[in-house]
Image (cartoon, rainbow, N blue to C red; front, top):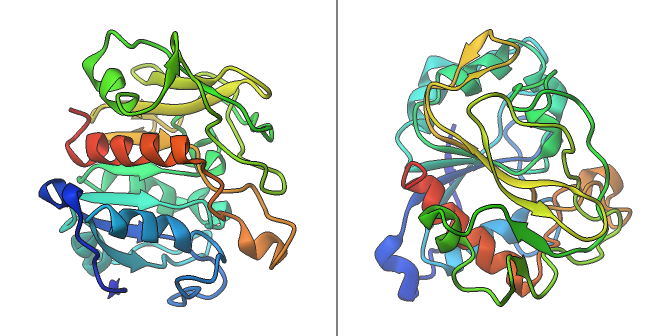
Length: 264
């Protein structure tokens, strides 16, 4: 079931407001951590609301062989954008439910967790190597691409790198993925200081993933965000805690706009 949360706060960005479903929280199916507690990824939802987006929440089933229902898939596809947050149990995506997220969700989908896009989960990348990051700047791979230029258009740049860090030191920081995307995927930005790995990448509808077994039913974007597993409060339960600097938030909001517009 989709559950509406919080009052939407409109701002100058509300002309580009999107209807977004945020998928997270693996404690108990159907339960969510409260907004404003800095537990799990609730602060990311506030970031979106403050930018004028309408946000609902969905807690998916966590059983490794539990399918999304037809009603859940229909409800997810009524939104402009689906975002899978960092605070999810990746084991559920290793089984048959993983194929549903690839092939039954026709609306654009953004992924915040490196663990879910590994070859053994949704299979958007070719391997499993997911190192923990240290705070660092991002390098735009191709600022000549209008999409990439837009994502970085409102942040201070030194050449092709962000002048300021993307993430702050929150326990074990982000996790990055250091293997290549599957054929058809494009790296948009990589960490260029500290731990080196992909932070933003996208995949057009029709991309073949999961070792050739799935074809993506819609546009997909990977955007690494949220602490790996915060040491306190809450330990593993607090994975996904907001760890973005002002620079990181600006990039995140621009990337959300691109994703909601099917990568355009």
